[in-house]
Image (cartoon, rainbow, N blue to C red; front, side, top):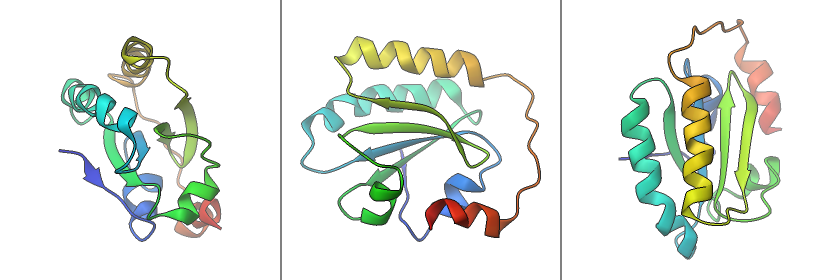
Length: 128
């Protein structure tokens, strides 16, 4: 199951997360969003607690959609320590997404975590 995040919970669940977070911006009307959902669930199972997966309804969270300059749905952002490390958008198909997820999994699973101490006020600047 994918954790649903909103503008109210974004800072706590994503920006302050102790592990990298794959953020899936989606919408109920988006057919491709529904098609990639099983791949994302499989990715979540494979990564365990190494990478957190969250979903955001782009239509209901307009401020986040603007902050991250969404151009199309779905858009996936890998955010680590409050910084975007990967941006995935405009997939050409399931295999395209599968390869991108494999790359993320290889680069972010089983590696030492070295996080700097960032204050909540600094993190909230990302949403301003």
